[in-house]
Length: 445
Length: 172
Image 1 (cartoon, rainbow over the protein chains, first blue to last red):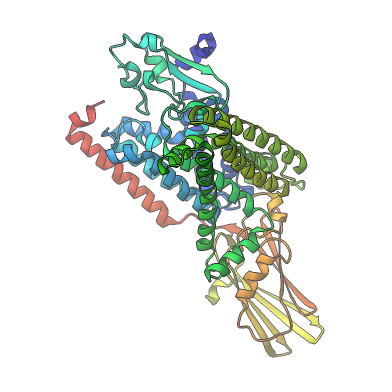
Image 2: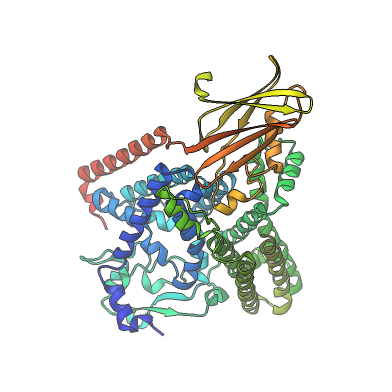
């Protein structure tokens, strides 16, 4: 089914107001968030910009990748700013080779860095720190937009892109080109652009697109293609993960890292967190409070490495059970089965976001009122009672484990040499372990 | 530093071991995210018996109303409601070295939705409550200046390069 066959969708995506109208809206929202983060109250609970950013946008972001792929990237205000800077003063140099080659690692490293800053210094609870983070992002985006062509930042350096890529692969939407119609194309307008419309901002050539990890759904190729070869189709969630043509190590490292990030965010809200910090301090011979950033950094590292280590062990067991034990096979196994972790990582990320969205979202009208110096007596911030939120999170996690298990089974059938079920089993157990930890955290929150 | 301590509250309280006079000094406005120093003097009659210099390591930051009422310490430095473990650890660090005085200084922090806080100290059976407004520190002018200069430099340099080598910039 091609969604572009539906007249109003086709008209909307070919309109010159797409994605511009969305970009103007998000750019205005971004300015509001930045202004309030820098100049309004530092109390996140009373700062409307902070509520918009951390209680609405951040929790909804992973969910959006499931339903509409990387649509957010098409309407991202930073990408829009980069385009404007480029139009005004852009030098449009090609991206450096090192960035092209190591882009996924750069994104992964930036994601880890920002996550560490957020978790250790609680950026989401401090308006000024959020403001400084946004200013730093603006600096980087302005630099990239001024000197490098297209959306080099989005493609090779954006930390949101790091997990957006993986999540979109598990999503329900794909953009592809019809190879039959592209065969005779001599202009490559989808990639190069035309006089009236730039080409693909993230350097894609539509006929070569094999996954949904990079495409932003900006619609440029749809407008540019003279052969009407582009289609946007719904698909089964996780379907793309069953047969990834060229598994990449950074993707797998990122998905395990995201799992670790969710786990540590949940752990930090549990009663066991303080004893854990104190014991870690004792283990490292550090004062748990004076050296908190270091201890927290250590814990973040451990939490993020744990799922990766689990994957390595499961892969070793998987290759042994499949009867093909060689170091290269273990790595290959890890890279293939790592994609099966994406649905569960996505589900745990969404569940964490729902906890915030459903648990705190009433703070948005409170923050709006606080902006006008009005403080209602009724100050319960949750839309739904905690047990209901907990049940919703558990349903999301159940869907995630179902997607992960099925993906693992499909990957096993594709990659296992002798015994697919045996090769799948260690990974299924690893996923079960991660699910159990998530369920425990959700039930305790 | 003394000049910075704008707000002085006197409270007399009767403790089990005699009459204590508690005097607290702290800035009239605490700024969220910025450290503040608090001085608590304890006198019996005219004689000072103890003093406390507590560093409110970071004034509290509440993400939501629930968070404000949550006694779980966030990272050991924000002060929630009630005698929470993280709070005590901070206080014990802050009062380390203070000679034995009237007793343990129970220290509570009561936020309200209007952004005010009431700091309550207990010495023996006596107590003092110090109200304070909580305001936000303005953004760092250094960071804002660095941002403005960086952006201006980048844009100027790019504009110059584009003007000087237009053919390079014209490439798709």
